[in-house]
Amino acid sequence: MELYNTSERCLIAAYIRNAAPDYSVYLAESVHFAVSSDNAKNFKPLFMGYGMLFPKCHFNENNGIVSAGVTDLRICRSGSEYSIIGRELIRNNKKDGIWAVGCETLYTGKFIKWTTSDFVNFSEPQICDSDKVEAADAEGESCACPQLDIRNGDAVMIEIPKAMADELAVRSNKITFKDVLLPSDICVSDPKELDKISAKVLYSDGSVHIKRIKWDTSGVDFSTPGKYTVSGKICRRRFPFPIESRPWGDPIITYYNGKYYFIGTDDAEGQKKFEAREADTPETLFSDGVKRSTILSYTEGKWESTFWAPEFHIANGRMCLFCTLGKGGFDPQSHVMMLREGGDIMNPADWSEPHRCVMPDGRYLNNSPLGDGKHGITLDMTYFEVKDRGFVVWSYRTWSGTDSGSMLMIAEADVNQPWKLITFPQLFSRPCYSWENINGTDNNEGPHPIVTEDKVYVAYSGGDAAGDTYVVGAMVADTCAELTDVSVWKKSMVPTLASNFVEGEYGCGHNGFFTDEFGDTYITYHGHKTLGVSDRIDGIRRVHFGCDGMPYLYMSENEDLPADRENVSITLTVK
Image (tube, rainbow, N blue to C red; front, side, top):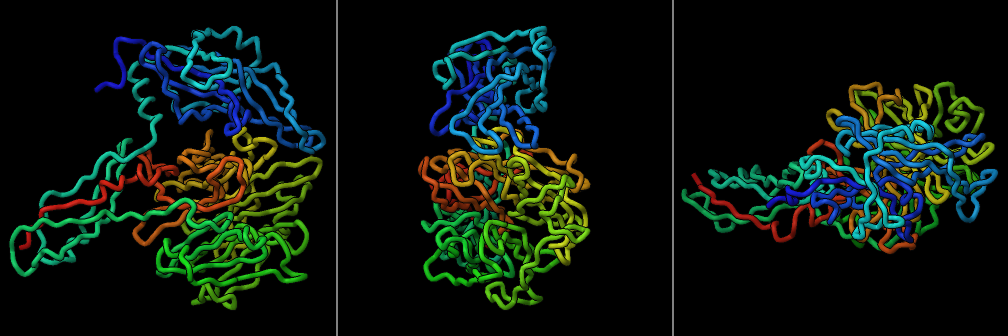
């Protein structure tokens, strides 16, 4: 069955959405796309109707962020290249660094232009003067698309080849389960040989995931040769959302020495301690009676505030706790604790005192790391190793002259003493897109890595940490690159996880990743179930790696493997 009627024109529409309580004007004033293969009778939104092209912010005289948007779209083509052009606007919602009620929209007199040949990969946004835009050969035509949520009911569209329309329609779908492949005939002489028989699960984008199977061999006599029908159940971990009702922020799970450990920002107890849990499986970390231990707690005159974002990481074989602590008042700063050799994570006495992070010249990390004379707060530090080198990424923010917005920094760290940097910090990312600088919250925070054979993927969060607009973005680089050179990193132009990407989960962010004993990767995160409700609750799900090899963060359990496809059977020949 064909996706569309081949006798009709194929079109792509670009449009600005209406703002709504669950979709801020900061998101709505971006470029959205929808595709049609029946001459504009029906359109299918791309990327779940979320904005796909966002202008970059401006910076004021004090280096503060001024959010930007786009409207009044047009579209044109030159050969095989398409251009999307929109009128630039900025949102004047701050005066002297103070958030003002309301948002005054100002047009800059400039236009923003993106180019693409496939509507999948786009150029960085370019600022254009109005005279150059007016001279462009605008081929797009206006249209009404009543089935789409379009501001003023208008969009601009242009004809595209049918093959492109079909490809975009497929890409706009989420990655979902397609089929299970099993070997039809298996010859064994020992029941342990069945442990090697796995299910190859196929997905809609052509990617695969190998899943273990728990076999029922009760009806098989391995001492008697012959054929048997053996049933089994495909193994997969299931986690409800939330995994528990007790509020935690910034949840982290790690697998270490055959045990699972959980730690996070303790919202329920007022963020005055670091409490760890230990269990045999990630599921039982959230069971009644799970083993718990307080690693560090409020100590008057020493550790009094902001027990934030603790993360377990292994540095050169040593377990460490990267964390944010304040000695008093509001002054969160990055610290590292180290577990003694052979120590027990759950024994507070086996942990070192927190070491405050310092730069190569011995200055504390918050002391003008960019060489501009500004000082600030440091938080949410994460750690990863590539080719025997250690790297740290953290969030940094100043209020000198104006609020800088939280930004990400990167540096190389001493793998033996990871609180000591061996290169000076480099600016890694600022919240330049309006899904990061949204509703007055200019925010890049909560970085956490996935390292594969050839890629380093650093997820981070943007927007309001307790709100509906909290999202996850990504920075990606090749493992063979010089990772302290920020030019080798590519930043995602859109979120990799946002509200309702998994139905009923809102404001998901400040995530972590862990790998289980079978080699599967999982994401941990906090969010909420009701729009407008800011209580942070936690979720876990498997990270799928798509056909392009990139982590895919919003595959629901049913999209991963429907419950009615878990049970399988094979014909088994006993030799």
